[in-house]
Image 1 (cartoon, helix red, strand yellow):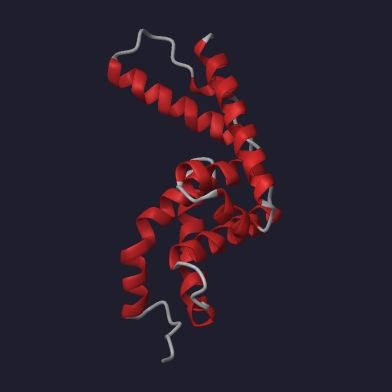
Image 2: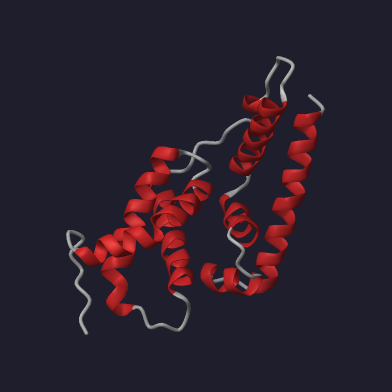
Amino acid sequence: MTIPTDPNNAHFDLLYDAHADWLFRLCLRLCGYCHAEAEDLAQEVLVAVFQSLPRFAGRARLTTWMYAVAIRTRRKHLSRRPPASVSLSTANGSAAPTTELEDRLTRIGVEAALIALPDTLRESFVLVKAEGLTHKEAAHLLGIPMGTVQARVHEAARRLRIALSEEENQ
């Protein structure tokens, strides 16, 4: 069976409906919560996945393969222009927070701390901790040894704890 590769057909709509939401969330995390960049990346990944479906060998789950396409596409974007860094101090609020506001500021603080991580640490951390992949799956997707993924996830978690505790003390 030949899978059509025209993004203007019903097969593309099925792929989009089934995967666009989680793929956008992944791209949002990889892009440091920049919505415009994440939307562009998610669109590009969906088209690349659809066009590459005939080459999908089925040796892994479709979603695992899509993670790999997303990582490669994101890296291609990074090679074109480096991402802007964000200061952790931009997430601070000055008024006495309510519970809802406290929750939002905490989430913003985590997002800002995640943005501040180097891309290599962020990729490993997002795949393992946010997306729930095993270290082995993430290593395969990133093309690095499993021990490197474990070290990067550990280092990312350490840096996030430090950044969040510093923010709490300000």
